[in-house]
Image (cartoon, rainbow, N blue to C red; front, side, top):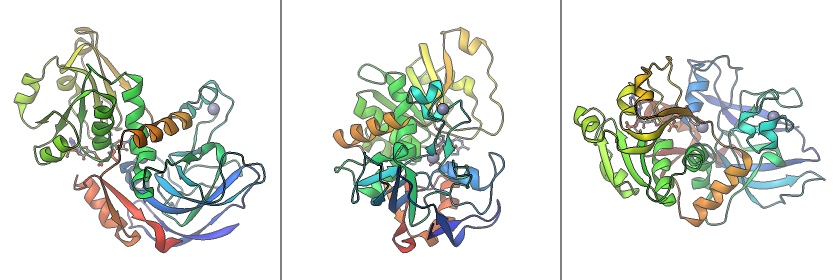
Length: 348
Ligand code: NAP
Ligand code: ZN
Ligand code: ZN
């Protein structure tokens, strides 16, 4: 076992504080790496504050992790010391169920994926995430970061990037397709960039026009405020695909009406209250509501390679670990352009 510095939450209500945690010895199939950067995902905040259920404290969040390999197990074939690597939202799964065999490990039905934090690994130990100096992960759950992507910008791709790439890819965003992105935050700004790179025509639906200049610079061709009722009249029946990155409860009926015949609205955020829609909003227009959870390991690698090839990277604000609590407050206030990334040098 090795000891590393980290930032942990000790309860749902207290600020994160510095601590030390242990990492397991490097097993035959493990890769150990120094963490250089860790992104702050809104899901970290939901989890830390126990909004998604029970949490084992102390909890070290962080599932957008990028770093450099320091040691590999005797039987590791995919990585070597010095490789630039990343880890996303999960570090293991059953490897035997239909989902795992199909490379959709995030939908593992054999006990579920093992979360990068707040999960329990094969060794029975609680998993702890990326707000720390180093980590040990089975090589099958580690990604290669292409040379064209710097480690600080690679980090957010490992959750925000794959979470938006996967549904855009699944529902065929591309030339001739009109895509709307609700919410220009961490996920939303990458959804815009990735959908544009796929060749789709992209519209941002934001609460206000405050970030309009940014949205258009990222490649969107239109930007509308959802606080303006006119938006919903103007865009009725306009989109093939709507990607909803907002976790607040929205009136989905309004948004469904923006879909064309056969259009789909994909939920990525998890609102606190159940969603209610009248069946007519789906029936008239053969519309669908769907959900999507991150992406599998193979698809995550595909996304990283796609981003390298198409020069897609997040817009980030790099912070020191002692700024994490303030960063959380700013994420909650939608005051982030567009992802906080922790420089973990002081934790190594
Ligand atoms: P984020 O950076 O906070 O972005 C969310 C955006 O939602 C904000 O920037 C804001 O955009 C909009 N928003 C916030 N409050 C709102 C409200 N009350 N009404 C309407 N719009 C509001 O968060 P994120 O990291 O992108 O994550 C977004 C959600 O996705 C979180 O709930 C997270 O847990 C979830 N998530 C899901 C998956 C998955 O696999 N499905 C993966 C990762 C994260 P505007 O200012 O432009 O309106
Ligand atoms: Zn996340
Ligand atoms: Zn499985």
